[in-house]
Length: 243
Image (cartoon, rainbow, N blue to C red; front, side):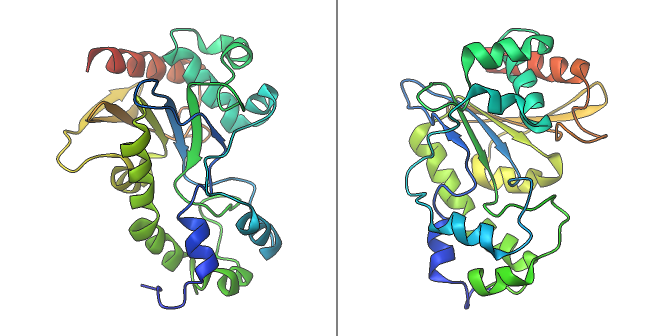
């Protein structure tokens, strides 16, 4: 475990609201729906992007996007809008109208918050560690970084859940199920497992919060069709109204 050399700057940043796009975290009296991915996509080719992110203030929840069209600009975001449209009681085909009317993750709007488990952006989850990151973070490898986040960042995320009490947390990426459990699910919570159109849905209840773990929405083994997104959205809506 690579902990002795972790930089103070990285510790502060990684245990803050880094990795979050933002929006409305909600309150106990007006709870929100949270969407949690694995990490920001796109990635950085060198240390400049990471350095700029670490300098930015992340001690308070990010306010979210300034334009609803950002929700339509990337495949992951569009798939998310489709799922949320179904959970809201609509059709996935109406996702653009949903994005315009509901404005998830938009500054000043209520009801939705967008975040990630891990704070550093990589092009994909298989991207190798960038050597320049070592000097900034103190980690010699990506594995050391991931392990440190599990022990130090995930409990912070769990504290957010306890403080803001979201009504629903949607987690994307079933191969990261154990990470989502640490971050969102209380020990001893019953696990429910269902198959919908040959895809796995895991769901739990911790206090007043429902947590669902879904396949990633943009790969060949994930929620890669409107029919699957509709099926998952309808089922999640049903779960939230019956538990």
